[in-house]
Amino acid sequence: MAKEINLTIGNPFRQIIRFSLPLVGGSIFQQFYNFIDTLIIGRLLGIDALAAIGAYYPLSFLILGFVQGSCIGFSIPLAQSVGANNTHAIRQNLVGGILICTILAVILTPMMIVYTHTIMVVLSTPRAILKMATLFTIVSFVGIPGNILYNYSASVLRAFGDSTHPFYFLVASLFVNIALALTFIVVFKWGLISVAVATVISEFFAGVLNVGYYIHQKFITDQHLRSKDINLHAILHICAIGFPMGFEYSVSAIGAVVMQDAINLLGTAAVAAQSAGDKIRQLFTLPMESVGMAIATYMAQNYGARKSQRIKSGLRAGSLIQLTWSLFAFLLVMLLKKTIISLVLGTTTGHVFHLTDQYLTTISFFFIVHGLLMIFRNTLQGLGHSMYAIVSGFGELIGRSFAAWLATLSLGYVAICYANQIAWGVSLVYCLFMVWWIFIHDSKIQRRK
Image 1 (cartoon, rainbow, N blue to C red):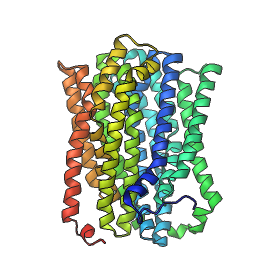
Image 2 (spheres, rainbow, N blue to C red; image 1 turned 30 degrees about the vertical axis):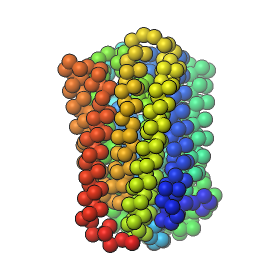
Image 3 (spheres, helix red, strand yellow; image 1 turned 45 degrees about the horizontal axis):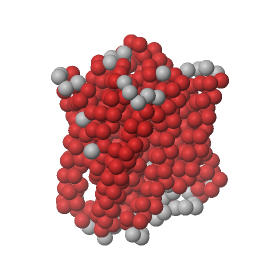
Image 4 (cartoon, rainbow, N blue to C red; image 1 turned 90 degrees about the vertical axis):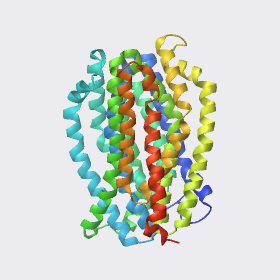
C-alpha cells in the first residue's frame, strides 16, 4: 500500500508528526466545513436554525461519537496485529470488524430514528426550534450506516499506517457536502434539512472512496479474506476493545447532553451563542484530537511489536506536540476571535455576540488540558485498556453535570463557559494516574523491548 508509515521504527516525534498531519488536515477541513456550514445556516437560515443545530449537537456527540469511538476501537486489535506482522490475525480482525460494523448499523439506525423526537423533548429543546431540530436530527441519523462505513474504513487504513488516503477522501467529500448544501438551500429551498441531507450523502461518498481504494489496491483480496476467517475469539476481542471506546465517547457525551439541557433552559440566545462558540472552539481543538488518534495507532503498533521504550518516547513526543499547538491556538483565538465571531453571527454587537465572545475567551485558556487528555486517554486505548478509558468518560460526565447544576443555580451562563474545562480536567487527572500505574505495574509492558 502506498504512503504507509511504519510507526514501530524511526524517530517517534517525527513519525507521530508525519502520521498526524493528514489527520490534522482532515480535522481542519472538517471544521472548515462546519464553519462554512455555520456561516450558511446563520446567514441564510437565521438564528433559530443555528440554535437547532446547537440542540442537535449533544445528541450527535452521544450517538455518532459512540460510532466513531467504536470504529476506532475496532481497528486497535488490527493495528496491534500489524505491528506484530501476524497476517493470520490481520485477516481475522478485518473480517470481525466488518461483521460487527454491519450489525451495529442495522440495529442503531432504526432505533435512533424512532426515538429522536422523544429524546429532544426530554432535553427541554425550546418549543420554537423543536420541530426543526427534530427533523434535522432524524435525517442525520438516517446516515448512520454511511458514518460507520467511513469511520471504520478510514480506521482500517490508519491501522496499516496509511493516514493520507482517508484525508484525501474526506476533503473530497467535504467539497461535495458544501456544494450539495448550497444547492439544496438556494435552489430547492429545503431549509435546514438541506444541511443534513448533504452530510449524509457526503459520508457515504467518503466511505465508498475508501472501499474503492481498497479494491483498487487489491488490499483486502491480498489478505485472502474468507468466511473461515470468522473467529469468535477475535470478534469478542474486537468488541471488548471497540465498544468500551464507543461507550467512553458516549459517557462523556451524556455530560454534554445534560449540559445542553441546562443551556436550553437559559433560552435561545444562550443556545445560539454556545453553539457558535463551540463550533469555533473546535477549529482549534480538533487537531489535538487528531494527534490523539495518531497516538492510539502508534501505541497499538508498538504494543504489538513489543517496544515499550518507543511507547514511552511516543508519550513524551505527543505531549510536546499538544503543548506547542495549544499555545499557538490560544494566540490565534486572542487575535482573531472577534472577526471569526462576527463572520459566524453576521454582527459585531448584541447579546448573542457578547455571550459567544465570553465562551470562546474562557475556554481558550484551557486548550492544553484538552490536548494532554487526548494523549493520555488514547495511550490507554492503544495499549488495549479500553475499560480504563471508559472511566475517563465518566470524569467528563461528572464535570459537565456539575457545571450544568451550577448553571441552574445563580451562575447561569458563566457555568456553561467552564463546563468543558472542568470535564477535561477531571478526566485528565484520572488518565494520568492510570497511564502511570500501567507503566509501573503492567508486566506485559515491562517485558517489552
